[in-house]
Length: 415
Ligand SMILES: Cc1cc2nc3c(=O)[nH]c(=O)nc-3n(C[C@H](O)[C@H](O)[C@H](O)COP(=O)(O)OP(=O)(O)OC[C@H]3O[C@@H](n4cnc5c(N)ncnc54)[C@H](O)[C@@H]3O)c2cc1C
Image (cartoon, rainbow, N blue to C red; front, side, top):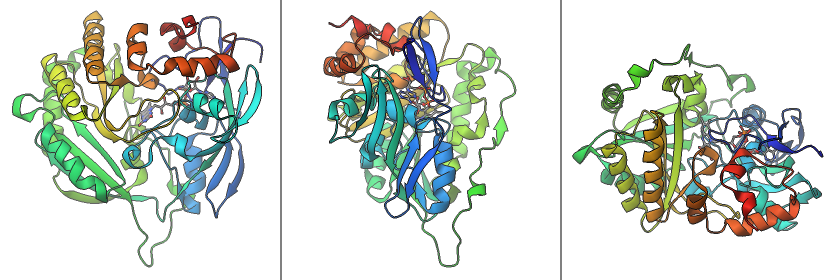
């Protein structure tokens, strides 16, 4: 393709990573929607990059396999998931999706190459989590995870505050593959960081139970938000009451067996969930704070959010392990993801201050979710980005593929 472009998947990125740069067009991958091969003994699936995770699940669950890593929505493309090097609720155990990609084919402006950790390694490590800037991933081989059942054994435990929550993660993580905590970021004082830890393991098949049928993997919405929520409802009082009620009604120590969709993809069940934030919308802010300052840094962030009344409904804490790609987000420690309602320029100023705090603890912001990080702050958070850009430039010397994010962060200004 000679016309300037940006590869595009399902357009589910929160920020501007998926928006083409000025005078660039979106290179839609939705026609690359074929499965190429599947080996049921090894669980290796080869598929074109436009296939969605939902389609992969529909295909592989009846065969006894699951995605080895999944983000919180299945409505994304395989190519988009690789270009963001997505992580899931098992990151502390498995790392991001990069660890399960055996090889991929990338159509770069400098030619089309197959790459893996052994072949064209630098292209592999800069395309995975490279936001489409080396070109378009056209197909990939992914190693799936064997499962016996499409259900998840869940345990929900309440934490009275953030210290309690850190203790619960440490106590339960050895026994559970997946963990994620919802936090009440509007709670103050002794209740700061209270929340609910949601743990899960793939369920085992008991004698006499059948495996799931393909038709049971549904994409139906349980409910749909019909219109944008009026802004006056998104005030601090309402949000505080909502969070308090959610915390209080949630059972402590409750064990359930749930369909994978309600554990992994709760938002996918609410059509137009973004309208809950009204016409002004929201920013998704996700940062990671690595060890050894992780707990201290998360506590400082929660204090900042509470003092500045920045929290909302959806604030999520997860543990992270380590990754290998050139521009990596996850580092061993904790990651905090927040939906912050947009209330005008003050919100942007507050988020700039939050960036400074995250940086002070050695942390960084997740670019997939970002739309506002400043170029200097990005450089301070991602000092290794120069090495990544060197490879990007080798395969994409004339910025044929570029995004709004690349322009905003002034990535191409680096010589
Ligand atoms: C509700 C929700 C929950 C989420 N939860 C998580 C989570 O838990 N963990 C996580 O890591 N992320 C999460 N995300 C983010 C999401 O996984 C990523 O934004 C993902 O990249 C979106 O994929 P997409 O197909 O929509 O890609 P797009 O949004 O269309 O594109 C995303 C990026 O990928 C590039 N790209 C797309 N296709 C290709 C291709 N074929 N070749 C090269 N580059 C390509 C684009 O240029 C762009 O830079 C979540 C998003 C939502 C909406």
